[in-house]
Amino acid sequence: MGRERAWAACLLGGLVLGGPQDGVPPTRLDATGAFFYPGLAAAPTAPRAALRGGAIEAGTYLRYLAARVGDRYLEDLAFDLALTRECAARGLARTAPVLARSAAAQRLAASGRSAADDPNGALRRKFATEALRDLRVDALVRADRPVTDAEVRALFARRFGPDGRKHGKVTKFEQVAPTLRRELRHGPAAPPEVRALRRTLLAKYEFKRTP
Image (cartoon, rainbow, N blue to C red; front, side, top):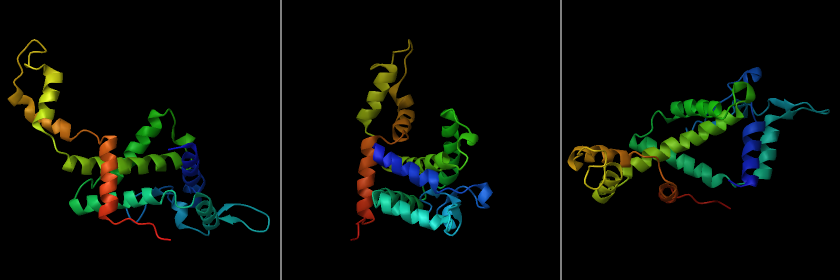
């Protein structure tokens, strides 16, 4: 993500935010199941700032953001929606929303920050949406990932040596091959796999920008 895109993401994620003080949950899973959003986005008439002559309402600010950001995230949204629908159709990643929230909290802690450093939940929403995508991408890639015998033997050679004697004892290929095959299949999606999945799903679900 370039600086301009990062700025826009922070703007969308950090300034259109509700919190407990607003009487709404700070984070909600969108009805589509594709992303998390600030609860205040569901209350467009809620004031976000005071200004002489009339408060700035959430809906006004959302429209202002849309005018500045445009449709640069439209394809990203289409991909997230396609991921959600494909996983639902195939019965994959059913617990992804719950796991994504947990992953977001862990990522925040790993960054050296606490909830006090993210009072409106902006970072956690961003992290949760990214984790939601990653979980679904990994599930789909793993389900369809082909693993060849050559790849299994290459992993065996790296780990145990070509003849299985790397660690001073004999390890038979036949004994560990099923485990190695599962390991190769269940590794995280590599960037080329993610790009291929994105192309496939956008084509399958017929994504097309409208004038």
